[in-house]
Image (cartoon, rainbow, N blue to C red):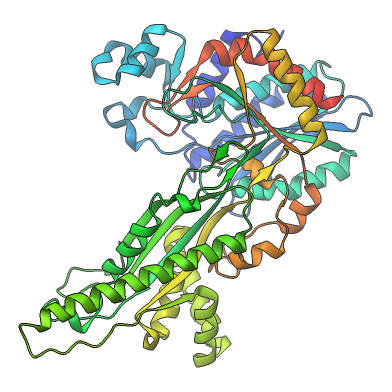
Length: 537
């Protein structure tokens, strides 16, 4: 008897997956991997071949799941990729206790339609939507892939299927970065020839009101450039004797926020401009001393532009910001001097990279002392997230070199997502044309996009730009090689074509997150099976 093939069976499995509150970094995230393993282990194929179903640890104690179904001596293998972690539920407000109870939450929204937006009310009245955290992003995709594995166990496909479900996609993608080595090991052990990495992330709207369902042959890249500002301390009663770091970062944010010079267009697809993710001063307590240290951090999406070019573009922004700071300071100081005997001197603000700052600190204090301080921070501030810990490491070096202040230090924080595209890969384009033709024949409004814009673990299917372009990034990333790394050799060896075809929903990462059950569990499953068939030909 088949378990996960009908619409109702798929919905039932999805509900059970959602009910495990697998927020990134929580104990339930580990429980989620064990639950997936438990459900798959109950299939007859894995009772006969239990070694084909495995849990693999990450270096922080989380687990990723692989489930390999082999068809005789076949080598051709499609990897089914998903992630099972979700973002937190603080945004659910009064419905927070129902965020992981999808059926109850859907009923509650229906009973209190006046408390939800108009568009959501329409979907509630439609009746084919399921609400809840992870319903869209991306436990529905995992549900569909478990369904495909069940079909593979019954001999449905002319080749091998390998389910790969990972943790931590919503944070630093440690699961997928760990999986690169796991995939190479499995290929060697079982003589597998990977044809494609097929992801099941949901369709993401390109603009408000976009109703299209999409198939993707790539995924955008992401970097997190930061600017650490070290000003000059002063009492608020003597502001011209110092330089406020909060003002410094505000000038940088003004130039970076929504700056379309950083938007990149490939064919007809364009990346959103950068936006600020963190901006704060680093004073521990309130006082009447002006803040002399502050940081600002930006989300920057990439497609094909080399990282060294982006690095140079960011430096130009920093140079422009320091000019504005210097000009504003001197202009206001001159105006103030009209009422006093104060004779202002021009302000000069230095721009440095983290790598340049490190070399300056080593020249002053010696490499062993700098490494000792770094090790102390990593050991004693381990509870900090990667963004704050990166800032702390920059802060420490800047404080050793405060004679260089005022200064702006450019650096990068994890995570890093390489942009990836299979738009020029023969197998991907051949299968894409067949899937689009299938969709047309079934009157499915399927549209094509090269780059999935929501960020995904497809980024770790290879290393398109090569290692030389990464030097400008990793040389200025304080945590690289310490608490964060990229399996460069494994990614080079994998070099997989990628494809993404997943369910349809709305409002990922919002309290109104929901899934279109009819499309996702009736229309999509046959098209997914057709896609896998084509990838195995």
